[in-house]
Length: 222
Image 1 (cartoon, helix red, strand yellow):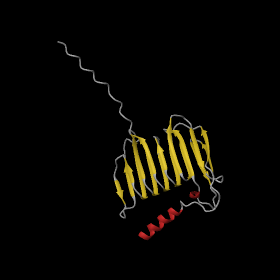
Image 2 (cartoon, rainbow, N blue to C red):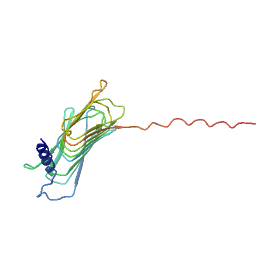
Image 3 (cartoon, helix red, strand yellow):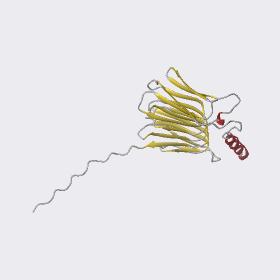
């Protein structure tokens, strides 16, 4: 069993190595904005590298892709209530051979579905349903502190840490970790899966505004 685990980790780590024949290029950045339906779904397929999705107060979606290869194309298309972001790679080349970064801003009520290859996934401020499947890396979520979520988070070889309490279960060989929070009042679902890496779910705490200043005591008279 140990040999199989080490072999699997070794194969996943090798995927991070850049291709020897891929020339180094200066980073190229492209940004596009697209209309987004209220309560719609943002779907990413075949993404890899660093993915950051941040909530903002606009109704549309802004997608910025930073890449170091002309052979990689990131495109977005509207399909009904979904905005689909796809990443195309040259044939016979692995996704992880390219250095990519996605910076996406979307409405807070957007639903997110991401099928990510290798790299970290950071999600900040989204309040809709979130479904992320990751091969290797870390899933980090910052969620509104007053939100209610039905959480299913599982790491096959890693840890799950959550500010939202719920039962936890480790696999008997102490590598896998699962956390669930079945909130009956939950309006949204979190379905998070990572093969090699950790899942961290944090509450974004809003500072309590200071109360009114106490009235100064009156000066005593003679």
